[in-house]
Amino acid sequence: MKKDIDEILAAYLNKAPLTEEERREFEAWKNSSVHNKKVGKLILKLEKQKQILARHQSHKVAFDKVQRQVRQSKRKRQLVLWSSCAAGIILLIGFFFLLRPENTSTKTQTINQTYISGLALKRPAAELILPDGRKRLLSQEKRAVIVSDSNREMRTDQQTLIVESNTIKTREPEYYTINIPYGAEYNLVLSDGSKIYLNAGSTLRYPDQFVGDKREVFLTGEAYFEVKSDSLHPFIVHASDVAVRVLGTSFNINAYAEGAWVKTTLVEGQVEAHCGYKNIIMAPGTQVAYNKTTQESDYFPVNVQQFISWKEGYYEFEDMSLEELMQIFTRWYNLNIEFADPKVKEIKFSGRLKRYEDLRPLFEMLEYTRDVNFIIAEDKIIIQKK
Image (tube, rainbow, N blue to C red; front, side, top):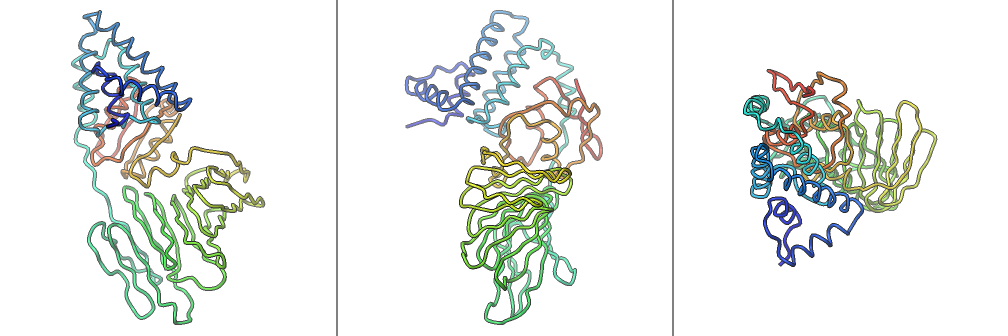
């Protein structure tokens, strides 16, 4: 029975003997992509550093601490996950950690614990704004009917708002707005059966039923769309100066108001992105990035998983600046973050971060780079250079 590559990597770095089958799986994984080969080289470098530290008793405390962290990662699997696109951040963290002899300081460990203590998270509720401006909070777990009359019904079920409309009556549609605050997520099933996953800090304006020759919605923020196929009624998403036109497909749009870009990532099917005066017909596995300031757009292939993983409860990223990473944290966890040193914003990270109920393990792992400290103040988190 094949083992998860995460367990094999953790066992390897924990000096656990690998079986012949595990070694073959490790080699196959390492040779499966250019990225994995790079990660494999980092593993070998880290292993050499551990061997050097084992011969120097003055570094024993640092070495023991890394071992404990690896065991904890393997046992609980609650920190940054080990995967083909995730191991990089752990290995880099461990590599920097091993090279710093000052990690043995008891004082430093105590300070780090103080920096990250007392941080608990509560998710706020999404809300539905009715056509007359009234608001309804949306349940995250319980089933509830939000709107019900002879024309429509909207109900919640497992963090999803389901819209059903009486299409027999001919009438003008009424527009509703679903608002997802920072720290929350919610899904929406429209009257045509299309499903939309809404990320934190997003707003979607939609009709209770679609009439005419097209289906239109209006997005601010980020959403993943699974559009119900209907060749006679194209589905159009308006996001800032971009309009994405589809017939039936899966795609992601990132269009936060504070962001400089509107990014459309196509997973499957075909879409046409209208960016200013430019129309681009996209193929699966590609992205159109539109700059709101310059009004210019680029079209290129991407690893789509990096742009849609958020809807599965984690975020996959590569060479992302700490500033951009903290923007994600701000939305996911409803945090107020301040950089004490602007230079820290440019530190790069790669990996796969799971969404936590408690941020302490996550901040601990990021602090192991020995480059940053996360200081918990009364109403914000201050990031400073070590």
